[in-house]
Amino acid sequence: MTKERVHFVAIGGTGMGSLAGLLKARGVEVTGSDRALYPPMSTALEGWGIPVTLGFDPAHVEEDPPDLVVIGNAVRPDNPEARAAIDAGLAYRSFSDALYERAIAGRHSVVVTGTHGKTTTTSLIAVLLEKTGRDPSFLVGGISLDFEGSFREGGGEHFVVEGDEYDTAFFDKTPKFLHYHPRTLILTSVEFDHADIYRDLDHVKSAFRELVAGMPADGTLVAAWDHEGVRDVVEEAPCRLVRYGLDADAHSGPDWRADEIRVHSDGTEFRVAAPGRAPVTTRTSLFGRFNVENALGALAALDALGVPLDEAAAALPAFRGVKRRQEIRGVANGITVVDDFAHHPTAVAGSIESLRVRFPEARLVAVFEPRTNTSRRRIFQDDYTQALLGADRVVVKCVPDEPIYSATGEVTEFFSAAELAESLRARGVPCDVFDTVDEIVADRVRDHRAGDVVLVMSNGDFDNIWEKLLAALRT
Image (cartoon, rainbow, N blue to C red; front, top):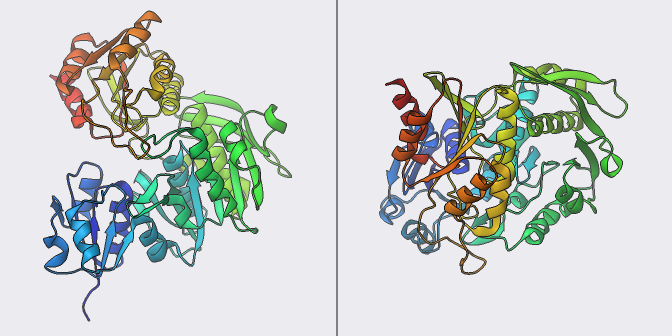
């Protein structure tokens, strides 16, 4: 019997690559193509034995037609490979539909969504389910340090997945998270992002409202109650609503609350109070207020899935985290280099805050690369100033001078790194802008002090600045 073959167009995305790995583990023959590949997904694909061809070519689907073509949402309508597959009448699916049909359907769909915290919270819920004996499956947009990968196929009833509000494909402009049909939904935050497809915050909220409205009556929505955007979109939830947060008094108060927060050298301790349950004190290896909130949301979700609070709280300290989320890449010459995926102003501020409490005596140098379609627009110009004020020194990579993709109209107002630097300096925070990674590395070597913490924030490969900086500091 001939083995089924599935071909992925734009396989290098974290979701696409993870689904490819999951199918490969099932015995499916998997191939892929992409414009370029970067770690960690490039390394993962190689380790899974999935051949990837660089560049898009109709021959990839015409010469030996696959049984299914999965088309990523980074693929444009004029992509020659995707176009050839569709025109030839081959079976094709968006990533989201392929994921649901091939992996989630028939299981209890646990979807984690929101502007921030999705990857960490998804990983955390999966780890807690696994450590409490529920044997879950999961797929996440990052590399879980606990599972040493971005997916897992278990024998239990739950499939935990990160749900993104970005659109599905060039042939399907609905948000990806609508395709996962959650029975349990965790909503961490709702803010303006993805300016290339959303006009404004109200447009973003409309997508989340549609998600909430589609919840089944017997489902559960676990909502981060400290966030105004979340409270706004869940007003008419048709299912059970569980509220969690750190602010005990605001907005009638959450059902699940974390308080008595204490920072230790190896993580953060906090107390959990929940209706009808004795308070439980637990700890996480993570740092920062937003990570306590993520952990609390995970514990509330586990309770909704039938895992007792004391059982889940006992498993929480073992959670190791996710690559590129406040990941220490190394220490050289007394300098700690940290890698973080933060790019939205709220995430940038949160990452700085968490490292402040983790390294209270250190000089914190924030190195920021604005590279997304949203961060390269002027929309968050002032917000980035406020977000970066928590650092002792800021270094910014010059914004690339190239067109910005937009489905919402021509982009005419652009983010200015020079203006950011001027604004920070006026507020007492030294800031410099550099054109290249080599210039940034030279600056950090020239200006370093023993005990510095260098926080590098980018959602891209940043020309491997982490290893370059560590190598330069060692010489």
